[in-house]
Amino acid sequence: MTRVALRLLPSALAALALGIAPDARAADVLVISNSGFNEVAADLTANTSHTCTGWNASVTPTQPDLAAYDVVLLFENGVFSNAVNVGNALRTFVDGGGDVVIGTFYWQDRSDAGFGGSWGTFEDVDPFTAGAGACEYSADDLDPASIVTHPMTAGVTGLHAGSYRGGVTAKLDTVVLATWTGTNNNGLPDPVIGYRTQADACIAGVSIFPDYPSYGAFGTDFSGDFYLIWDNVIANADANCTSCGDGVVDPGEACDDGGESATCNADCSAAMCGDGVTNMTAGEDCDDGSETATCDSDCTAVACGDGTANVTAGEECDDGGESATCDDDCSLAMCGDLVVNNMAGETCDEGGRTATCNADCTAVSCGDGVLNVTAGEECDDGGESATCDDDCTSAVCGDGVVNMSAGEECDDANTDDGDGCASDCLLEGGGSTGDESGTGSGGEGSGDGSGSGAESVDDTGGATSGDSMGSDGTGAADGGGTDGGDSGCSCTTGSDDEPLRTLWSLLGLLGLGVLRRRRRS
Image (cartoon, rainbow, N blue to C red; front, side, top):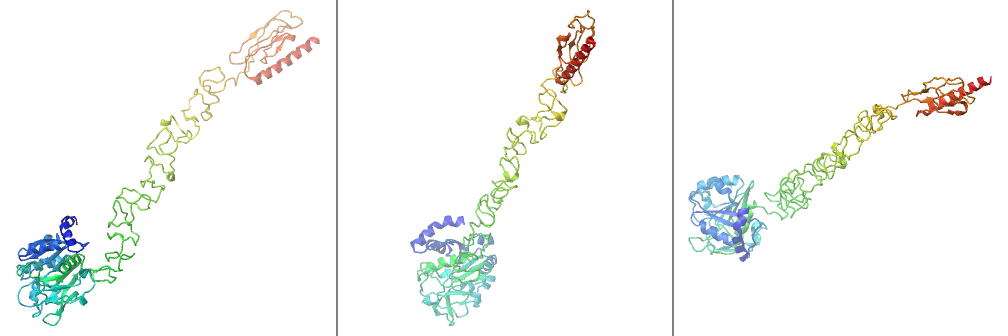
């Protein structure tokens, strides 16, 4: 925790100076004692990798008081005052997973021997008992052959006690990691280091009788690996007393493969994505315990396009690439989101209708059936309709665009009559033939048929003709436009209807032929 890290530096430097490697599990420790709590805390802080704080045993600690520390260390060479209340508080702490180290050889458990004192319910979980007559006040050495490989004994090779060493017996289910060379006064092995576990809690014991403060300076009655033992035991108590990494599954370990494996984490917990332990061997890039902005819920590093939607990282979707429902920036596909999504059928996306992109994210094209006013379209029915020209303008007679769907036969960009296209956009001249005739009287008529006749005018778009028939003054209107000068007949026409002109010309010629035959006869 940050609080520990900030307070750790002085003790860590001191530990390095003593040749002790600061433990990765450097702990924040509460030292409970009758009188020497501050001195013990200061000494252990200076000589181990842990940060220790003293607590007067006459004051019963609350659970929040205890929970503020990683490990509670009981350290006293006399009978604790307020022992029952403190003991009961510690038992509750242990039941909640708290870790405790007992740092003296039997005073905390004198009721086991029946001569006074009690630690209340804590006595049910401590690792050692001081049986009647078992106490051994003599110099001794730690037996190297008894050392069990464990984090609590890491690096330990020897420990010499002056005239005060243990004299206790390990309780059932206590794991003994080292013993003195001699036995206790009952002839039983005299443990130096041991521990018990209860659920997630570790209760460790170091069976020594430190000659402090009554009999001299702290620790002067011990030589060898005195501080290393405290450093190891406190650190491993904080790690639930496990010997993770030795290949042997111990109490509190879910597995132990001698190191990280695809099924076992380096802390000997079962490998599982979401356990908060990154296991590279199992293919994890990260493991934050759940989805975070940098780690997906499948324990892969966050990356848009990895196929795992990470809402915490701002992803709305992640289909491993662009899909019909997900843009390639991991936002939901939506026309108007400024991201062109070809899989969703978009050909453009400019955030709304523009002169080049329709509101439905298709490219603008007159005749696409999508009205785009920004592009200048007045209408778009997907082609010519009765109301919309094929250039996407509204259909109006006189707009210069012939719209057959609207019934137009012509459209000369005006609504004038008499120019071949009427004001209703229908062709002119369809019912006018120029067949009006004029009759006049003339003179006797010369031999060549010359004379004067009446002129007939057709203002409806038909022929305008004038004939003089020198023979008998009878003029026939000739809409054919044929000049019969050699027979005294002259015809002109203003008709634009070529078929009708041809017809009238033929009729005129036929009439002349008949007249000539009559004259000859």
